[in-house]
Image: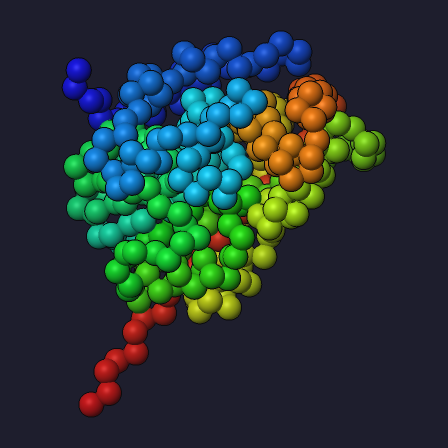
Length: 350
């Protein structure tokens, strides 16, 4: 059977189908729409063809009925299984909507080389390849789980914390999304990104720190399961050296040498409790993100780092999910988008 190549139309159609089908009823699961949301080309046709290191990176670890990365085993404690892949694709749709149907906020002008660090399922890299057909787009990740790409896009198995093997002063644009929890040394990461961006090129981060907020007149009790789980998540990730709550990206990018650094924040409601239609749609996406992703983000961290029993972890997660579906709590998070430019090279002296 020939491999199916994803197209931007696939994802646009998926967005429309999801927004029509997945509603929020305050009690029943909205996750049942997940299988109908993903077409074969974005979900079941993922391929491991022609990627560096793909063979050994596919010897995955299985633990507590979840599948984890084999390459640099233990470095990133979030699963890479089908449930997680589908969640990442939902997050892509949510981000696209939040950014007003844009893939980035950096002011790009006909980029020729683009790098997506921690590409996940590869959907962002693929859509960038269609948006900029004259560009060469590379996505890298710990696992070869990506869909077959168009000709101007490719995927590598790489660890963002290792020495980057790409040429320096090479990329017009480097993009990352949801690397919180996967990086131990952010200053080194920013320095490597700076070194590999050509003068005049851009770096953009799109991150959602695990810091919940509520839009209520009276703050809800702090001991609710949802707040306890998120507090434990921040504690465990901090103990593991990979904090989920860091928000100092702007200053760190400036310290690495980037200029024109800007930070933009977008509110992400948990559930469709906002009054406007766009906020409701974003909230529906985020509810699936939360319901599908909470166990994946918590399970390995809580059992391996905090030493908790798996049954206790799942009990806490179920309580947190019930809280998440409570509209009265009006919980939201922030999407933080930070972008900066590498200065132009000074003119050569005569």
